[in-house]
Image 1 (cartoon, rainbow, N blue to C red):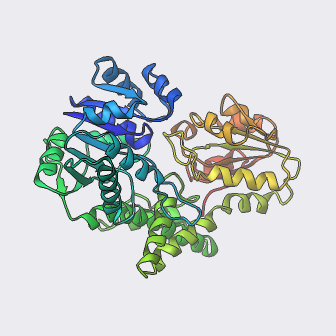
Image 2: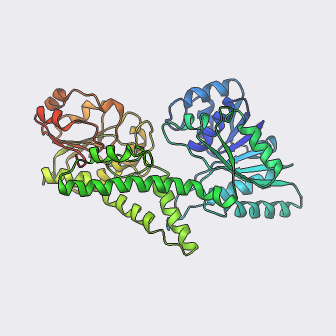
Image 3: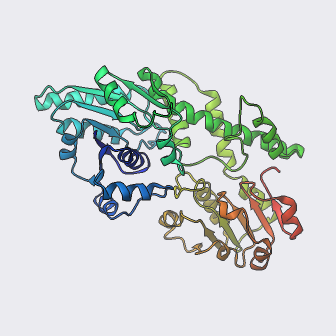
Length: 439
C-alpha cells in the first residue's frame, strides 16, 4: 500500500520505517529540509536501537522515501498518518497546532478519497476538530472529496520503539467507515499474523487510552517512590519491598523500581494534559494530580542526599553519569539530569563533569554557554578530581565498573546512586560513602 507519514521524529520515523520494512511504499514528510537531506544520507536524527539499519535498508530498496514536498505525496497515498508532536502549551494542555497544520495541509492537496490516521497523542474529540478543519478547507476549495478519519494511538517506548512496532502487544483503532477499516486491516495485516490483536473500539476510548496508560504507569512510579520515602524514614529496604510487591501477579515488576523521578517526552506531558482535559469536563483527577506532585518532589532528592554528606559543595567538582531520561535513548526531555545540573549550578559548584553514551550532543545544546558544565569523552574522564559522583541514568556500561579505578580518580569518596544499580556492601569495601535511593 502507498502510505504517507507526516513528521520524521520518534513516532513518525519509526512508523514509516517499520511499515516500509513489511513491504509498504512509504513517504515521510518533514518541513525541516536539513533533516530530510540527512535522512537521505542515512543520518538519523534520533538514537533508537535498530532504527538506522532499517532506514538505510528500506531507503536503498526504494520502499522508504523522504521529502518536504507535501502536495505530491498527499496525492500519492490513500493512507496518511499524522505523527506530529503534541507538546504541552503554557497551561499544560496538549498543543494541537501541528495536528491542525497537518489536517489543513492534507485537505489543501488531497485529490481523491483519503484516510487521515491520527497517530499523535491527542485529547478526546480531536478527531472532530480534524474533520471540521478538513471539511472547511475542502469547502473553501469548492470540492467534495470523500474523507475518513481514523484514531490509531501509538504505544512505543523509547529505546525499543522498533521492537514495539514490529511485535506489538496490541494495535488499537477507531474508524469512521468499513472502507477505513479495510485500509487499516491491510496496513497492519503483517503485524497481526502472530495472533497479536488488532482492536477496533469507539472514538472516545481510542483517544483516551494512551493518556490513561501513561498516567497509570506514571502513578506506579510515583507510588513506589512515595513508599521509598517512607522506607527511608523507618530504615526499610525499598528494593526488597518492591520485589515482594511485584511477585503479586496482579501487579508485576514494570515501573516498580524506586529512584529519581520519571521524565521523557510522554509521561510528564500526558499526565498534565489529562489533568487539564479533566478540568474541561469538570473532573478532578486527584490521584493523577498526586502522582504529578510526588514526581516533582523527587526532583531534588539526589542533590538533597549529596548535601547531607557534603553540606558545602561550593567550588567543588561533581561528576554526573547519565544525562538521558532513561537508558538506550538520547532523549533529554524532562530528564532528571537537567534539574540536577541546574540545582548544582545554583549551589556554586566549580565544575560539573558529565558523561552519557549517546545524549551528550543534545545536552551540549542546553548548556552551550555554561563553562562550568564539562562534557567528557569517556565515563572515567568525568571522575578526575571529583568530590562526588551522581548516577542519573542506568546505562548497562555503568553496572560493571572498576571501583578501584574510580577511587584513584576521584578526590572524594561520595557516590549518589540515583538508580540503585550498585551494591552498597561492595562499594563500602572500597571505602566509598555509598548513598542509594532508600536501600
